[in-house]
Structures are given as structure tokens and as C-alpha cells.
Image 1 (cartoon, rainbow, N blue to C red):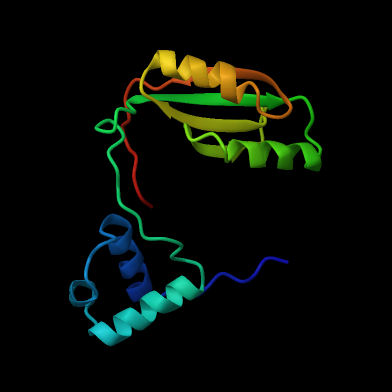
Image 2 (cartoon, rainbow, N blue to C red; image 1 turned 30 degrees about the vertical axis):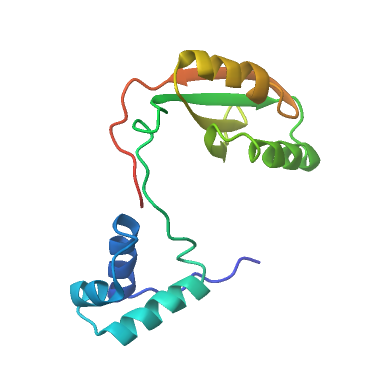
Length: 154
């Protein structure tokens, strides 16, 4: 049975909103912005970490400046959708660095991948050598993004 969702008040939501955009903000500045002192703010952050609401602090990266401007979304259909096959696919997806996101989908296909590469040639290699070779993949369909309108933290 899933655990109950933690109760979050307006201060918790403010902390999460600010940290999702500015993960390196100091505790003092965060406290000032939410209207609490430093100690209660740090205690709330620790509680949110302990509850698993805050899972990591990361640097925001610009994929275009990193040479990864090509984005493709890939529908993946599996030949077998029994639990063992799904788990094998899920494990294998973790080993492909170009797959930025992987979602199991309730649709006419089984998974939707977001794949980021330098260009269409690099994508073609990843598709042919890595994605198509993932366990139980029977077919793929690719949709190339022309522009990213919105990406970012929650």
C-alpha cells in the first residue's frame, strides 16, 4: 500500500518553488524570501529531504551549449509486456545516456522516450544501435522536436 502523501504548508511549497529554480540559494536568503528565520527554514528543508520530497540538488544545464540540440521523442512498442520483460527494458534504458526521459504509457505503444543528441546523424546511430537493441523492442516511431517551448523544473 502506498504511503500517505506528506502534508505541505505554504512555507513548504514556497521552499520547493524557490529551490526548484535556484538550488544554490543560501539558507539565509531562502529564509528571508519565505518569511521565516534560518533555523526553521533549514529544519523544513531537512524534513522535506527526509520525506523524499526533495530528492537532489542539481545544476541546471543548457543542452544546446553542450552540443545536444537535437531532441526526438520515440514511441516504443514491445513484443512482450509481461512484468519480467518490462523490468528488463526498464533496466536497459538506464544504460543509454542519450535517453533523457523514459515513460511507460497507456496507449497503442508501451513507452515514450525523450532522446537528446547532437544532430540527426547521431540520433540515427542511437536509434539503430542502442534503442532498437533494447530488450523486447519490436518497433519505434520517431517525432523530431523543432523547438522547445517549455522545459524546466516543476
